[in-house]
Image (tube, rainbow, N blue to C red; front, side):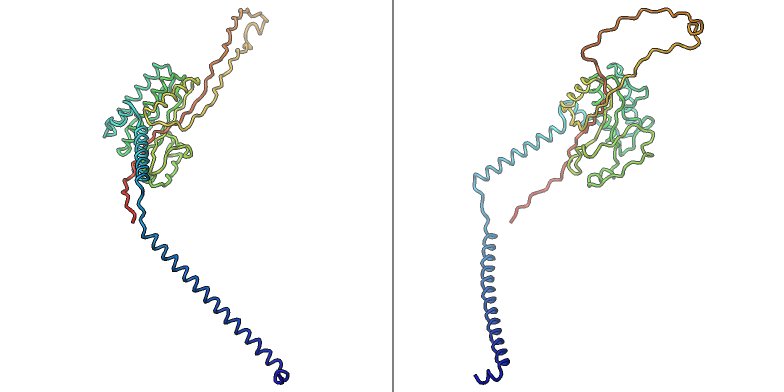
Length: 332
């Protein structure tokens, strides 16, 4: 006690140091106990995981039968959809089985026959067309396509003939144009299938031709690697019933043609005004009265007046891309 009184600071520091050592020892013991508990829980979880990984639960007969039935329904629906997307009837059969010409000269004469046939069809249906109308094939008015483009151009010709026949049967007043997508080379097709964007054609490349147009990718059904498509565009002047007849024909799905857009513009009729009297006539010089002609009685106006409109119909021919077969590997 005398020592504490003589050296209070020294003994106070010794007391504090002792308490600190005791607290540190308690903390080390507590953390050690927590670490042991955590290690025990980790070992238990690992053993549970190993046990679950070794378990291979076998499905019941009822669940197995349900999965097999669902698989059969899905496969049947897929087959039906693929068959429908090939078209139906003799038109689709002709599109699939018509031999493709092998020489550019053969395609050239085939297109000439097609153009003459369509002109005769338009004349018989009383549809107005341009005197030099080539129905979307102005590019080949003097020679056939390149060899690697022959299959695409010939197929476009067959589809164009189907579309024009359907339109002429609907009897519009006038055909303004038929446009088609530009056929692609083999390298461009491979790039498109790989999901690459094709470069936009310059104006110089398409100058002087009225054959091609580019469909808006936002309305196209094309999915690279899964669904291919070839677009066509018909522009014509008619009444609404001609458009309805055309759309009903396309809805029969003789060919896998899907309507992607219909645009309508009113056709404004030119106003007819009576010609003004000439300034150098006898009546204007000498004041001679002009003989009056009795006016014809006004014709009764129909209750529903026939109105012509300019229609632009965009369609796509759908092609399913055959995906490579992938064998399923059993999981272990």
